Length: 537
Image (cartoon, rainbow, N blue to C red; front, side, top):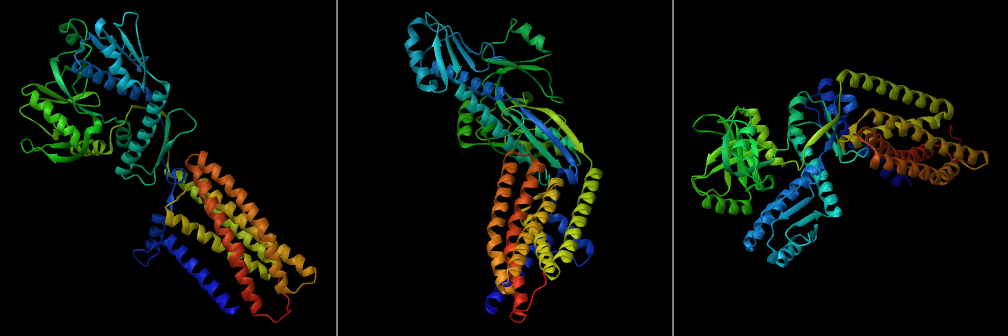
């Protein structure tokens, strides 16, 4: 019995030491300030305690649908040409309101079967395909299932890209997740940021880098371009303006289909232009994109090529020779920070669609400080009141309960330190509720022991039966509360998730302390008493 008790005591001490290290870590010095800094570095504070920014973003998922059909339209035109089918145009008749519709005009009457075979083979799974009576006009309408899939992928990709961008900026413990209160929306919480304007521009930038063949320009204005093009832009081209600082500035007519797109970028890094000593961004293409770009540049030597970023032309230069897998972006008023941000954006990937800000609120650190002070004060006062009550009401056994409650709190904070869990104001409420659940468990056990003592059983038998009969009820209450916390975690937002995490961890710790630690303390106390000697409870 004593050997078994020693092993259990060693286990409890080991858990206590491990959890204390989880809270404090290894301080850089032996001063109080060093210890405080070490604790604060391990217990992360949430947005409502540390201050920061709360954002709700709307992902314009229809743009992702439009981008997909733009690409498909260009590929359809190319496939028709390769199969010897000459058509008037491959276009989107109402790109703004119905981006999912592609229309092929001017199909020769004797080529209808070839067009049907080509479209069914390559696009039949994603599109509903139909033609007019004589087969001169073919319409491809993207199926609802394909549209839903594109929209969902756009939302999930946007979440991943934003998360990578925020992490690259060094924001501590950000929250980036789908916002369940709205359709195609993202919740972003950024604790403790000090340069929100930069963070906002980085988050919102689509960072879609494309290389297009230049067909005409520069024009002084969009109207000037339309006048010189006869009033309308050809179906396979589009007009794009230069970015601020680009020389010469103006509007260019470029091929609508990009030769290189954002997904073709393998990596990017900041460098210095050896001629101007100005910062620039070097980008590198994937192997497949590099092979295609090499063929394209070899076939278009001497023609101008534009680098388009976020639908603005950053550079226009003539193709002097074959280029395989590398290019650079420079010029304009690009600073070192601009170059660094651009390289980071290209490395984290482009957003599949633009973002609109629906909500933006800033929480000041003073509000967080007040919340911390009041929450900690409430937790300490509540803890002290419970400890004093247990000592008065249960006498000597109250010391047992108090030790278990203190260890419960240490285990909970140690868990948060090791896992990097974020402590929010609702999380502090979860800690307080955990203390209450711990008291409830001890009350169940102690009252059961009192009943066994009143029934005439010996102290050892009363303790054994008290724990045996109370443990079932304790487990039932804890499991039901954990289920409720799991639902809060699955469907709640940041602070609510913090409450669910701290409550669940506290309940698991409470099972260990109330059932295991408390029993070990009782057994150790009984070993020191004579057989039949009463216990204080």
